[in-house]
Amino acid sequence: MRFQNPFTSRRSPVLADNVVATSHPLAAQAGLDAMARGGNAVDAALAAAITLTVVEPTGNGVGSDAFAIVHDGRRLHGLNASGRAPAAWSPEYFIGHDAMPAVGWDSVTTPGAVSAWVALSKRFGALPFERLFERAVVLAEEGFLVSPVIATLWANGANRLGDQPGFAGAFLPDGRPPRAGERFRHPALADTLRHIAESGGEAFYRGRLARRIAGAAREHGAALTEADLAGHRPEWVDTLAVRYRGRQAHELPPNGQGLAALIALGILERTEMPEVAPDSVPGLHLQIEAMKLALADTQAYVGDPAAMTVPPETLLGPTYLDRRATQIDRRVAGDPGYGVPSPGGTVYLTTADAEGRMVSFIQSNFLGFGSGVVVPGTGISLQNRGAGFVLTPGHPNQVGSRKRPFHTIIPGFLTHPDGTPLTSYGVMGGPMQAQGHVQMAVRLVDFDQSPQTACDAPRWRVLGGRQVAVEATLPQRTVRGLTELGHELSVEAPEAAFGFGGAQIIQRLGDGYVAGSDPRKDGQAVGF
Image 1 (cartoon, rainbow, N blue to C red):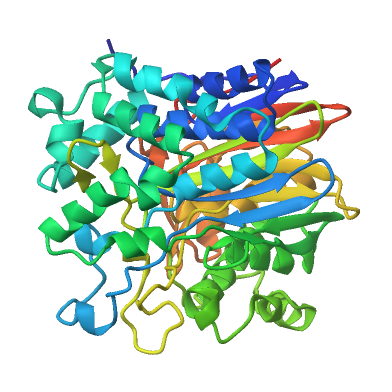
Image 2: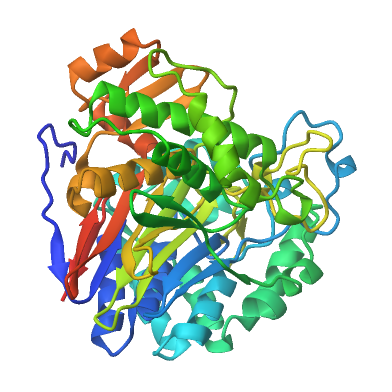
């Protein structure tokens, strides 16, 4: 069967009292089922996230990192569950490397996703922790039909990672990646999920699974140890925020790139957005230029917060943002010098319930299947977040013992000025995430688009210098106009849409919600 669709496929927004939006239908259904059985939005988010480790292994796994923003009906709470570098890592450890390794054991930092599940469940959950795993365990044991987008990404990952330790045995049944519509079973992962569920997460950091992970690392001469795993702790944090067109845009503080989205929105707040169509040349030019400046700042200053010499509050301060806004030339594209995060695989989901809770949650293995390393007999695929470090001496993101690397994955949130929740949103996809947050905020706030319309709309992605990728659905007159301003555009066909990420959005509407799910992914928004 051919799954490529030459026609525009329209999704309808979902309006309900309890909603879930994810990148995979089976995960969305797991989240909805959790709420139907008496759980709340946090339980739904966790059930969906755990299910995604089974059905979308191309973007996440049990060995992922995770971040979350939760509105509990009263206020926002932030959670940074990203892992740290092994204690043995230092700049000297990587002497001889021109850049940080992107695959294999020397790209693996301590995984934090399991700790996020535990922390969120303990603080906000209504269901017993073990019940959150039930749907995922069944799918891993009995199998699921591989969806079209995942099948494509699976094949790409197999070509790149097939020789990494444990990868073929876990993810290449019969020696090849599964095709769309084929059933994939992962009994070893089902057993691992049971151990995590029954131990309340302890097995992963201080029990039998921790010993398996550390033993596999030791066998391959890698640095990750049982002490590194046992020493991991998630961190509750306050969000950073900037005012944007009468709303407050929230992101988590570094080590993530959420700061880039806030800087760009802070710059745009100081410019007058042309009151024309959403995809107008003047409007997109302003957004692109603001994003370049924000990415330049992020590349220069962001890393483990303990190593940052310029605090986020300075970069979000009115004096700095005023100065940055004056550096945009409305007549010509600029090149402030900036870096763009590496492309990667991630899953983002959002949930909301009738009692007013909203969850913005993201977890990721980073570069599609992560490091490619799978711990034998467990189904635990390990992320490669070590690749987020740099080797530049003195840089705040220089690799070091027990440091947290720069992270691409970011949950987003919009509130009214009084803190009342408005929108929970995110855009998975490496370099697209901060850029996607800006584009979603502009569409939702400046142009009052629905979540589904914002998900469907054409996107742009800054690449480097004056280079910008745009989707083929962007009007030709806009492409010509941006080119005339000096932007060096590459127009990417619909089948290249993986590079433009995948959005999931839930927005408050009266006493209920409206949700949208990105057609670039296999997922859906559901509700009751």
